[in-house]
Length: 504
Image 1: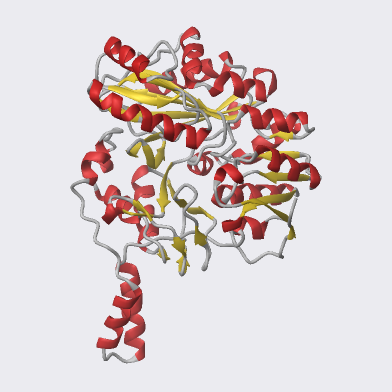
Image 2: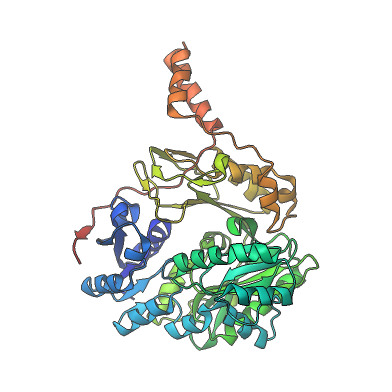
């Protein structure tokens, strides 16, 4: 097994990887930007190295600097997490050329599948249906207009590289396309380093369903079931669940079969997710392959008991796939809430700042993945995801009830969060029935009222106006906390401080 791994990421996913490395007896090296000096992943790692200022292009996207730190710190492998450089074939190739193992697909596989436009062509040749789209990659708005008229409006603009909804736009007219094209290209360039786009025909009320795969060498594959990811705001996932409530056994079998075809066609290796959209008629269309660990991987782990990060590390080390399909047992249902530092009462404006108080939920079937502790600074430079709160139950109803309880006892002070959105979703009748699609939430959110949280000053005024004895004051404080829209996750005992090496 590896003795030492560098984690080329930050936040909750870096903490998540460190925890599995601890379990396996592997030492870890963290990299961090200047604003992340106090971050939990920096504290938990055995070593931590500064790599630049807050801007991602100068730190977490700085390939030469990260590879230099990896070599200087004597690691054998690099885990990229998700986002940043996780699907970047150049980063994987630089690691390989430096004698480092990239924990993920080989650079050749990443290069062949990095372009979602070309990935669709591979799926089509494998006999998997794809959504009608542009026949070329688009670099000029004139090319996009010609393809849009061929497909027919409305169309969806998408980034050829990367994922997570970045660069995605729905356009209904040629005028809208001209306005949106440059913005989409700029967003894609900033997020992934590539500005190329392509178009797809826009489907009405589709559902987004993905299949989690783990692939060993020589084509050995295991599927860990599907996840429903249709609860999205502006193409950004907000909540996921497994199993997908829209699937019956026959459609589930058909979906998994198509996912396996795509993986085999690309000679895929390590953990990955094959994503599909499901039309209102129940037809599946290949969307893309995410060549990394997914944000929402934790609910699959809760239902199957498989540590996906561990499997990634073992496969990369050459140990092979450590389980067979017969060994995978699916147990119950699980849901995941992505808690973002955003203000729902102000059109989801980002809410960076310092966490003044953080109290995570607990109880049976609850898992929290986060890097938050009291005093943590949520920087303005990165994705607003600050925690994932997930629940597991014997059935979907139980998982929903457990998640409601977890959200109600979560406290995050200092920044605004999206917990009110998740609580509203869990009470929505269509969600409870499992009857939803990717375009539903954008419509519903506009009708929901997210009252601002009480400020500390307002709470202090309430206390001053109350003449209760201390015991009743404590009860009032507890009740106030329980009724506020807030959030949090689990913490570990403070570990020993890592070695900080400056100036590499």
